[in-house]
Amino acid sequence: AQTVTQSQPEMSVQEAETVTLSCTYDTSESDYYLFWYKQPPSRQMILVIRQEAYKQQNATENRFSVNFQKAAKSFSLKISDSQLGDAAMYFCARPHGGTSYGKLTFGQGTILTVHP
Amino acid sequence: DAGVTQSPTHLIKTRGQQVTLRCSPKSGHDTVSWYQQALGQGPQFIFQYYEEEERQRGNFPDRFSGHQFPNYSSELNVNALLLGDSALYLCASSSEYQETQYFGPGTRLLVL
Image 1 (cartoon, rainbow over the protein chains, first blue to last red):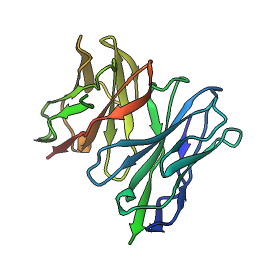
Image 2 (image 1 turned 30 degrees about the vertical axis):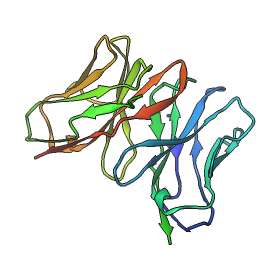
Image 3 (image 1 turned 90 degrees about the vertical axis):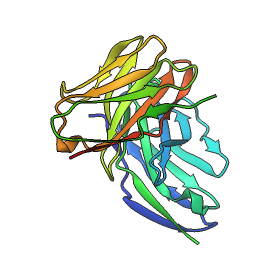
Image 4 (image 1 turned 135 degrees about the horizontal axis):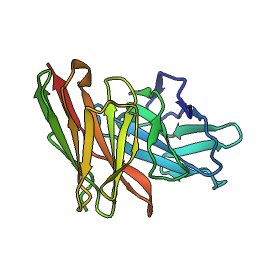
C-alpha cells in the first residue's frame, strides 16, 4: 500500500515562532507530487503548498516552506512567523499515478495550536 | 473566478434514505473527485470522474455512486443510508493542465 504518515497528532507553537510538521510517504513512482493542505475549524480544505518530486528546489509560499528529502521520502512543512490564523489541522497528501490530479492519499493529520 | 462549489452545505437524513450531493468544479477543471471525511480523520477517496466516466474508485460499497455531466459538474448518490455514512463529503476538482487539486467547502451529512 502506498501510504502517507504524519507522526505528530498535535503540535503547538507560540505566535511569531517557527514550527515544523513532519510527513513521510511511500511510493514506487519516480515522478510525483506532494501537497500540504490546511483545514481550519470551518473544515474547508485549503492548499498550502505543493512540491514536484523532479524539482530539486524546495517549494516556498510566503511564510510556508517545505523540506523535501526524496531519498528519505520525507516532506516536512515549516511555518515561519506563526500567526493565530495558522491554527488548523494540517494534512500531507500525495496524488497517485505520477500526476497532480490522481486520487489523493492523506496522512492522519496534525492539529496545530498557536498560542498568543 | 468561482472556486469549487458544493450543495447543500448541510443535510440531515434517516437510515435507509437516499441522498444526492452536488459539486461544480473550478473553472477550467474537468476532473472531479469525491472524498468522505469522518470527524478527526483524513479524507478517504470515494471515486473520480473524468469525461463523464468513473476513472478510479476507492474502497466504498456500491451504495455510493456518481455521475458527471457534460459541463463537468458532478453528483454523489448514496443509497440505503447507514449511521456510519455521517461525515463531511468533500469534492475536489483538478485538470491535467493544472498542477493542483482544489476542494469545495464540503457537505455535512448527518444520518439519524
